[in-house]
Length: 46
Figure 1: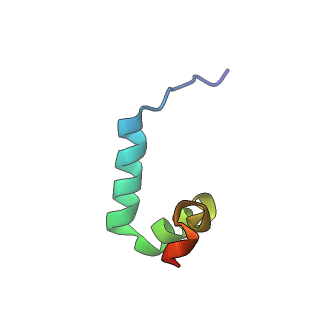
Figure 2: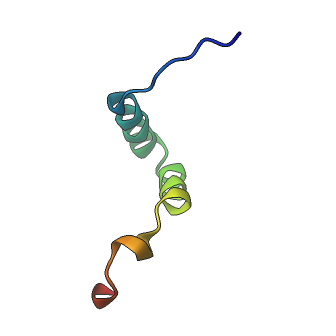
């Protein structure tokens, strides 16, 4: 059986920060994949 490990927000933040500092293209690719900028930014700002 595979043991489970609960991820904390600090773990997720640290992983994102490491990716941002060490591999910016991969970090930006993650943002494009999982965050819909059009949903966040109002039409009046585009």
